[in-house]
Image (cartoon, rainbow, N blue to C red; front, side, top):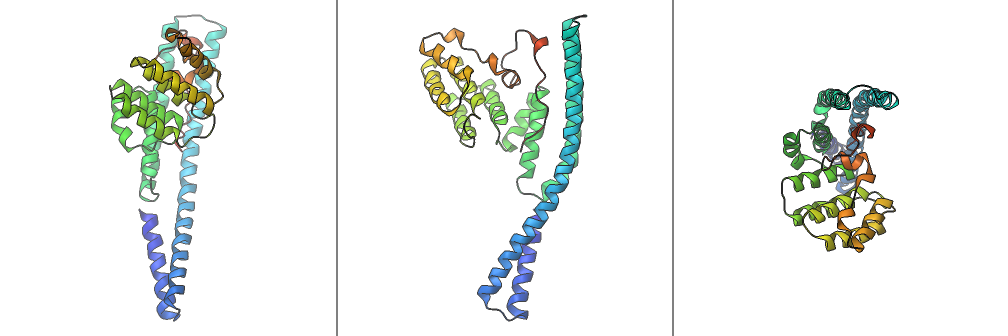
Length: 273
């Protein structure tokens, strides 16, 4: 990474100049070298992050404008439902795919910064993975997933969903769940708990699903979690339903909403970090 190399060069230069030229004790020279390393790292990372933020702002604006246009089309159809709903939905999906393709192209402007900032390449892969997931290009998603940085609930849920679809062992999906959940604060893990419980039920493990939801209700305040916990407690497995989670749930493409035209478009903010 360029930032580390520059910081190391600065540290060595300050150490040698302090030790030999200024005739300072080696301990003081080492201290000044360490401070130079930290100062150089902070300065370089600040400048690089500033450039990254500017590029990301352009991508955010692109997605926000597209989101407004899609929402306007949905509202227009709901207010005056004329035409074939399937055709309207197909047009919306085509527009969304075009928008996401433009966003993916925009991420190429971030590629040069991968050599400057540690872990940024993994963050960039996470952004691209999320875009490909929304486009349902799951082959590309599976290709990028091992090189992603899973920090937010949605990317963690996407990884769990792909593991389930690819028939990974439940124990492996559980590891992903616990790892993703460990980074989250109170009331941030609703989607992860709901998905893991759904996966347990798909694998005929209602007892584990119920036990998980009991824990999930302690970590979150959410009506869907509470309702599903009570349903499983009363052996009403068939009534388990995550639909009230809305777009977060349906964006995983594990289930389809019953009334698709009344569904809002999934978030297109492209925020992996």
